[in-house]
Image (tube, rainbow, N blue to C red):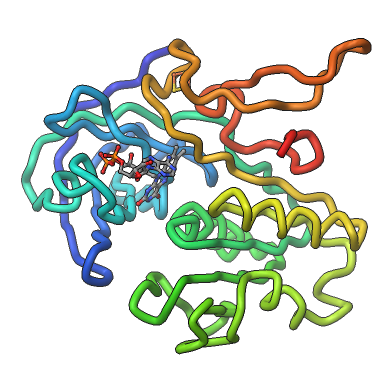
Length: 254
Ligand SMILES: Cc1cc2nc3c(=O)[nH]c(=O)nc-3n(C[C@H](O)[C@H](O)[C@H](O)COP(=O)(O)OP(=O)(O)OC[C@H]3O[C@@H](n4cnc5c(N)ncnc54)[C@H](O)[C@@H]3O)c2cc1C
Ligand code: FES
């Protein structure tokens, strides 16, 4: 079912020079969405742009997205301001399954910190044991940091010098044991984190933020290769927007 809403921007602030944090009123999305899902946001360009849901306030019927400026669409969306009317399609996709009684390691690279923030919010609210490891290129790119997170920077100008795997290596045996890993970030980073997890016998899930067009499973722009379920076939094509974006790491053909 298409779930498109005419919404109002409630507030906007800049998290750093090129990243906006935008709060949008939509009680339907705020009540339905779960971590790992995304919304498609309209701008004056032909296609809507996808953003992971970063936070939800059910009581006020609002949700937040983080928007890093990389092109024309994000330049326009990051400039939205309170009171503006926008079209929003969502919540879209299959996100992360969060189960009571399990413990989690959440790993975020760059803008992956937004969906990971939502997962952290839900887990903290439900008392589910978890740790967050986040990686950025350098200090200027850090957003939504929290003192409880393990922070890494490639440049080494904040936190641990290195990438998310260097951050993961600082976890204790007890923190790692029997955890489920959930990861959102650039493809090479997710592959490295998935390998880190499987080499320790842990189940890992990754969010495949491929370039998208329709966002609802029609155009096939966002397909990725997933190991085939049927014998005699090497792989299936799956739509990241509709079948994902979250897939088990070991099922993705990298
Ligand atoms: C499921 C999903 C969730 C996302 N969540 C967030 C989020 O929470 N915050 C955020 O800032 N961005 C997020 N993105 C990326 C965001 O959608 C793109 O940056 C945006 O659509 C670019 O639009 P544009 O018109 O500004 O840039 P364009 O002019 O379309 O492209 C500018 C540059 O960005 C690159 N680019 C565009 N889309 C992607 C993509 N999906 N992955 C990698 N590179 C891309 C292009 O290759 C090009 O180099 C997400 C993408 C997906 C698919
Ligand atoms: S973006 Fe159209 S099928 Fe996924």
